[in-house]
Image (tube, rainbow, N blue to C red; front, side, top):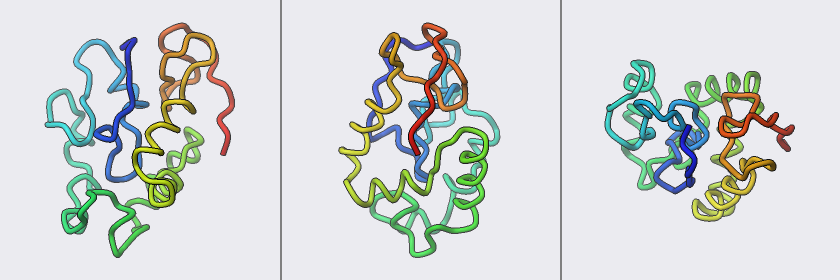
Length: 142
C-alpha cells in the first residue's frame, strides 16, 4: 500500500468521493490515479461512470456535482446511498461541506479525519482496517 497518501484537491471526484481514500488508489501495483486522471489502471465501472461522464457536470465551473442545477440528481443519490450503507460515508454530505467551507478546507479536514490513529497513514474507506499497519479503523463520526 502507498505509505505517503496526501489528499489533494485533485483527488476530490465530481461526486464528492475522496479518491485518496479508495483502495484502488492506495494499492501499490497498478494504482488508479483518481477520477480526474486518465483511464490508466481504472476499472471499467470507473471509466464508464455516469457521474464522471455526466453531460451536466461539464457545464459547471468547478467540475463538482454540488454546482449542478440538478444536484442531488438520481445518480448522486444512488452512490450516496450505497456508500452510506456500505462504508458510512456520504458523498452528498462531502459536497455540501465543500460548498460550505470550500475545497481547500475540506481537503485539510479529510487528511485529518481519515488519518490512522495508530500509524498516521490514510485509511481506506473500503476497508475495515488500516492498509499500512493493520489497525482496526475507528468508528467514523457522521
